[in-house]
Length: 329
Image (cartoon, rainbow, N blue to C red; front, top):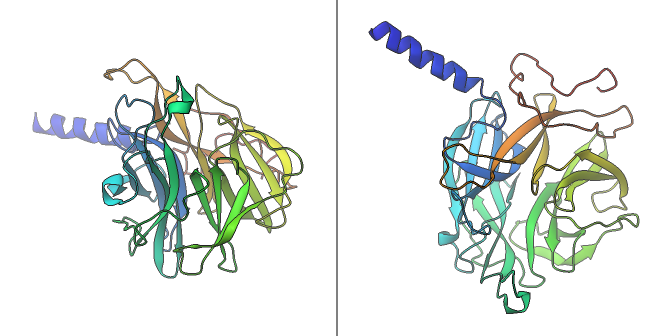
């Protein structure tokens, strides 16, 4: 009987290790807005927002960190920062990003106060700003060392932090009246240099949120959820543009989508979130879960269109390659 029990446990462990999309980040844990990074330890790290079960209107309180070496089995490092740790905000722990510089790890995050009145917007008191926290470890905890947002106006959220090969750090935001804006961070990562600067987007500027910027083969990519749902992108020869719109690489599904794109052990990976039904949940609405797919590029650097799969990146360890075709690299 003991042998059968142990065999059953081993079977469950194997099944869990081969979990399909969404990623197995934790039972009954709802995560969204994944920010993927490969740090000096060589592992893949994810920083996410955390949806409370059946939460109302995106009232969110903390940010989580996860790590993996095979993209299938993930270590949950728990909440690495909470709005309880902030003096200037008490709600709206939305999409974060992270960076490594100066021998430290940085978590850039949006948070805010007040209430959004969706029935009568004039009565809304909601405000959001961008904070920056530091840690000596990628697993945190992170500390809000400046004790304030990087600026008060404009209202801003969904930060993306990109550090170029020369060490210069650029912060991109979704902001009130200031989408498609960028500002350079100070060398100590505790303030910004000057004001937000409007980038040249080539004349096409749809509604967007959650930008993500990365570099590949000397080209810069500005990616975003166009209309908050459809993943699309621009390309440029500079991190501040001018940018050329190159189209859609993932169609929408059910609700908003936030993402990140990172190269890990020679493979390009798209992290994103899905809105899915949760059997046994306390509510009947769809909830968000972090997922992943392999991403591929054409010879000219453009991104191949990608679909959502049940397999996701489960084939990473053995060279599996979902969404690949002979036309891609």
